[in-house]
Image (cartoon, rainbow, N blue to C red; front, top):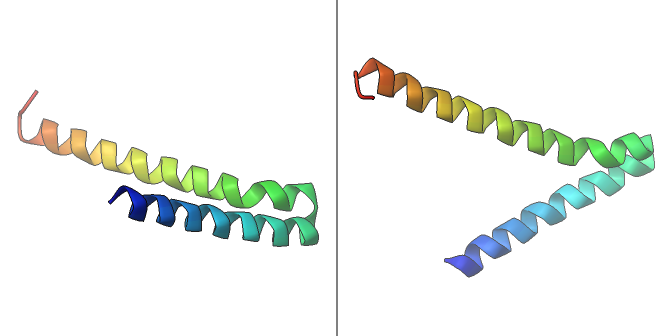
Length: 64
């Protein structure tokens, strides 16, 4: 399972790097930084929503 996760992570990073290179050629330094920033902010957004839903259901059910 570790090999599979490592391969998927490597592929995901490679795709982000390719998009960064293409955007940097079109938009300069800003294009180089936008794809990783979008992925990072998207991850934080999803993580925050999941944590809030967890605490919301915990409070709703009366478990502390």
